[in-house]
Image (cartoon, rainbow, N blue to C red):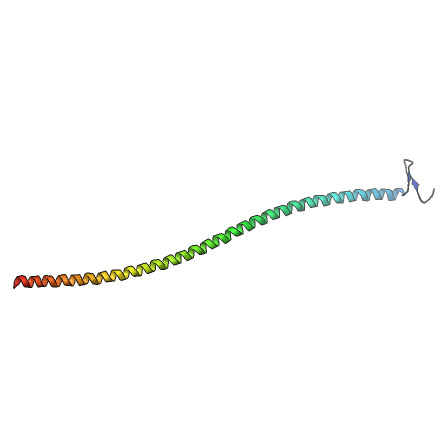
Length: 125
């Protein structure tokens, strides 16, 4: 036989020797298995990426809600401070008005007392 070709057990002419042909077939099968594993891995990675994108979207949504809530709380705090200042101003106005009414009441009491004294003096004289 020549070194350029072989005859296998089925009496077929082969360019490669049996061992090389077997190793080539094994390598082909291993490559196919490797490609199948790569495909499986790509599928898993694709699912993982989709999951992470959904999670990222949910996190972003919650983040926006939190920012909105924080802004609402700040706004409410400012409104309460403004309202408190308005109420303190109103309280001061009412205190001033109350003091005026007290002074007026005391003045009226004094006038009433003076008029009674005058009437008593007028009646007794």
